[in-house]
Length: 317
Image 1 (tube, rainbow, N blue to C red):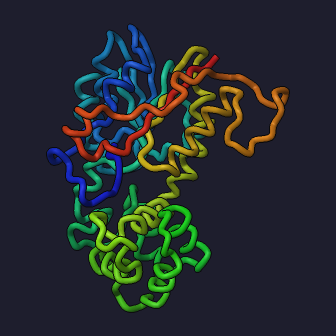
Image 2: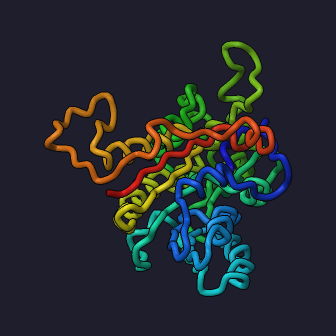
């Protein structure tokens, strides 16, 4: 999926461009008869690469976006019983009865299909309803969330999830604008937030002042971080011994969750303030790279949206 919501970074071409495709497949190391789970089907790039990688490979794929169902149909027609698709949120992986896997992949964030579809409301490049739901048939739209959420929830979205430094101004502007209609569409919402944030300390920035807040609102509406926190342990339990778990993140909040999970499974301190003793830590996996793997300069040039992607992986003992 794409790397960020920086509206100044256009895609190299319309449509979906799978990030870290070759590197992730290499980590998963498919062999004949391998069985994989793609927790974030999106445009299907990673799934298709795995299906092509060796004979008799099977991929079970998940996606909550109804638009992904149609994209999955062509792979189903081509690979038959070797490709199984479930229309579901990867955050509910614990509920899926699908057996054990040799490898599991997560590619968090939005797909380019979602960002480039103006009517989905993820971008403020074009005027559209402020929806932002990955599943437009479930839950609250962004506009409904902004109109009804408590001040505490707005602070969580703008300050914690969006990491907006001027969050007080943004939250106050949103609450003041309720009932005015300006929270209903992407461009009026972006203008409202931009006016609240104001110019940066060093003058005008190339990044639109509403970018961080849009990210935070989207994360809140879709419970993205909660889904990751639920999915990682559920995925690990579904790995066979020797199986590999790969996760690609696109901003620091996602990567922090993945990093701490990998360190916890590897029996390492999760963070600087982790005071657990060695006896309190269990080594259940080995990290395949101590540092996050970033896209190459060539990939970034071909797909500017991949710039902020970071990949981590571990092997279950």
